[in-house]
Length: 319
Image (cartoon, rainbow, N blue to C red; front, side, top):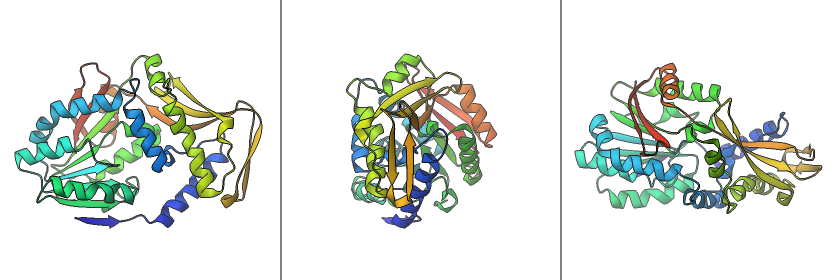
């Protein structure tokens, strides 16, 4: 059990300062979704995955349960790399399948949160005797080239997180990922699919208000970490379907005119009544779109699996 640390708390603090300054001084204003996930935000997201409106986690888990053995047989991966591993819970399906065919030697969870990796690793070592668990604290958008390369590797990027990238950003990331894959390696990618817009909006604006609390939590993060003066009660959560871009936008709408200070940045920002600040995009896909984007990154779509309802897809791509 080892951990490589390519990110320090100072690195994360510097990124937060830079991202918040850039976002609050842009038009329209934005805050990056990666800052949802402090301790409170992570707990709220776990609550979201259990909501009746939020189908994605259940759909992906169903596909993995049905296809894990096939994925293992096709890839025969020696190393499983998981980008944005968090608690690594869904990956147990892949770990068990790869162990059954006898190919798996190491698991590499990659996350910006050292706490998440340190929490998950002892249980993994206990559950899989003899498995080399090699945690990496890193930003997978910047540190792909530093990840262990013992192959063949299966790189898993699950949960539909790829949809949080805007198109140019997503193309650059997939291209970088494609450059790091060697012959015999494979990418397992989770993508949410285009469906009824009303159902999509409900998934991001549940009746219990859990997603609203999750969205608003980013203001608490800015207040705590950067000395912000956001009055959280004066913002409301909004989810909107953009039919042209085929994505959901989460926004925070200002209730009245207000000024917010961010003391650590020596920054004051004015919000107009009703002004909306974007906090997340979540793109939805079709099979041709996924295939085209993978091709553009130098990858080939080899397998495509969906749940019975056609809500979510796992694709397996090779270099």
